[in-house]
Image (cartoon, rainbow, N blue to C red):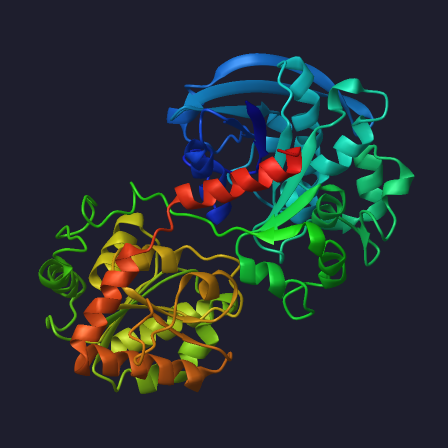
Length: 481
């Protein structure tokens, strides 16, 4: 039995701010239980809902040398869906209203967490073969592990995997402060280890010391070796390229299933979508006060409204797009300029544009189920989950060819009759508009081809099962099986 420990700053269903939580919370239950035992360790935040906090069982507590003092570390556990979750407790560090706050507080909190993860293991009598670390918040785990190996037999031979969910966030702060606080020796704080551009960089430390580095799609793994996507670490990514690979995130196919989804108006499947899917569209048009027309092409957007997601492109061509025979339904919050841009067009074209400037899980399901196409023109996208959701619901993605979008959406080829969506290459507003208009043309003039594409999209398997098999191969190669 191979023992794997996930170290993470968030995991569904306990605490979630982004896609990292889905990976850390959902992936573990998809491993082959005969051969892999995956457990998860995360902080016990005060902001975890009471329904979960009340179920945690006390395991042990101890005092850890930390920042020139002794600091309390509590350990609690919970079995959820067959997976053991451990929660590291310290009210001084994990009390806020949200898991993350100011970066100077976060770097201290997650250094503490990283050291506590390793210090806990001997006391709960659990020695994993591999510790799988997620993002900068656990970047110091491989560094501490390297430090703990000297003079402590228990930690020798434990392997580490570092997964980068988004290279933009690295956890950097003043080197002297980090050195004092973590208690790590001087020799870790040099440019070929933890230091980057005069600051200490947690993610860099994790990448340097981990046995394997993964990211959340093959294309992103290639992209981060270039200056444009490399966030100043492209040199390091190239240096570690023999240990770097990409595995696309999955989707929880029980939660995202058009045949059983309770949040949508009309369930449908690959067999009957031609008749049933459109009923969702009409219901949504009615709910949002758009012109009710089952034949009108509806384009969905569910996203954080930020530059990274390509909203500067959308803003640039929005007026032109509104002249077309389409409806646009947007859901999400973010930069004020984009929130107001959608509000403006919803006011100007009330029967064509619906601006829903909030986030709601039930509404997102309705949009994935109702729309004909889904627009996602990201500047960069390590993996992206929205395009996987839209494929699952037969809503064809229109994406820019970057990161996970390029790996999961196959562009339509009208001559070979292949593809599961539409894509464009350059980060250019009119190239995007041309691609949207090409999709409109297929939708209105080649309905059979469109429906065949919907069929292919719904047949795709991006469930966690798929990702879990690839992680199993990675673990096996690391452990020499």
